[in-house]
Length: 116
Ligand code: AMP
Ligand code: ZN
Image 1 (cartoon, protein in one colour):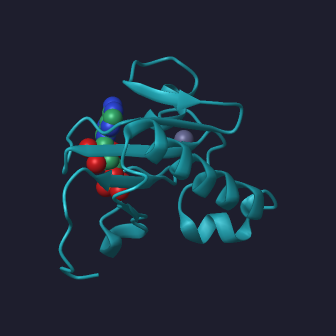
Image 2: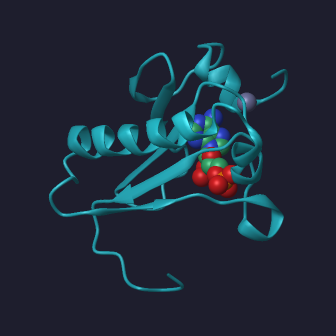
């Protein structure tokens, strides 16, 4: 989608610090990390958020791909054994700032219970 920063990263039009990618998904380091490990897991298909994923014919496959990519990223980044947190922000109250669905994987630190 035009003017979507994550579509541009997925298409190689703007640079990112990529962990890995395949036909369906790209994983790259967050530009403003909130933890020692903080990557974004982004499907290459433009889907705006979790509510739109539910309405998309590819939704089930993409949801699976996101979790597969999270596990692969965790292994590559060495947080698979100790654990990590996956976060999806949806919409304004959810704190979503980029309207292309993505999951944050954060780890490398013992995360407290906090809100969740
Ligand atoms: P969210 O608030 O859930 O929409 O998350 C968007 C995330 O994208 C934030 O954590 C930003 O730091 C991150 N971000 C924004 N622009 C870039 C970029 N060009 N490369 C990597 N991460 C980015
Ligand atoms: Zn997009």
